[in-house]
Length: 166
Image 1: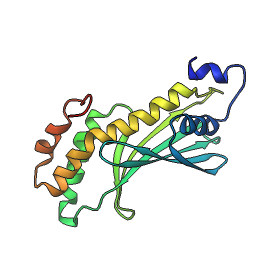
Image 2 (image 1 turned 60 degrees about the vertical axis):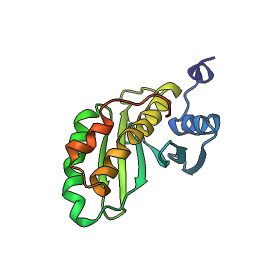
Image 3 (image 1 turned 45 degrees about the vertical axis):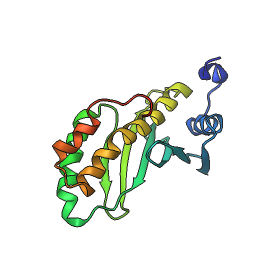
Image 4 (image 1 turned 90 degrees about the vertical axis):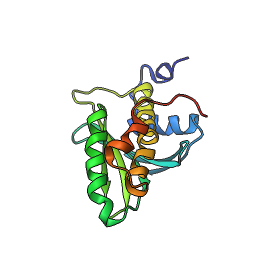
């Protein structure tokens, strides 16, 4: 049975769907508020913090996927140049670096204006896209900051999506 079939005929709050997905995938999560949930999603490189928040005001489900990153100040220009290259390849969502919090952020907003309802598959796809994008570009960010590689050189490790594990 598709995940959507479980929610047919009833309007479910998007964060309730997120909580169901977290339970289904056995992710650690905390229902921070009625309109917000925080989850820990295990990747190959690290565990990512994924937060989803519903804004009824603008009817948007916002996703933030973050991981810690503490580049030296002299590497920030390279990182910002690399972020531009990465974001040129990201069609759904984008990366930004929050320097005060020392966090790399992938963010995406699903606009559900006009009384639209998010389905479990949409939300699951949002979460997976965030984690897969973070997994794909994490090595490139590391090479830019710690590997003394130019953003162009570092991006070569993220050119093609990897399938499976070595």
